[in-house]
Image: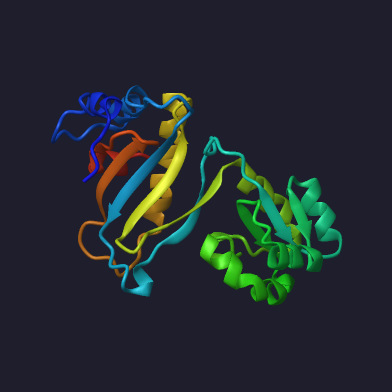
Length: 238
């Protein structure tokens, strides 16, 4: 097991062993325990009472964080006709059809964070699915990234403005970035509230017993701060 450095141990010492913190306390602690020199990402990790072996219990959805994640999102759009220029006008970094698909396929072009496509492009986009899929870049209706041409401007603005996709891993845990340490406590809490609303709304009908089992807040390279699951579930976007 790797040993932690002095800065990490000093940060960990600020967290009381066995204590579950309120959202307000945890948010302040995550700011106090961030010791890196850059603007660390604030992450929420939730262990859910789901069985990932069953397809109907896996979670994959999106949430619009009121204050975004603090990260600049590069958007690529697969479209044709007037939708190409409309996408660029709406803020897409790249938009096109055959030539863009060829660029991804032949040049291994992946300088983007989210790929969006219109339904009529999916037959062509599917041919590069073997490259987009492993990188989590394949457009998918569950992530809201396959949309009609008329919905492209709205979708692009939402993605750039703070809409994020989240899904459980193979152990039933969600890992979601909800902001930066530089955010105000109010901004972090409002993003946290929006995420919790989305997680509760996504509860699979087949999930049995306690749905949200543990909730942990942390920052990049910082120690995990356990939250009181009951108090966190009581949060709601006002």
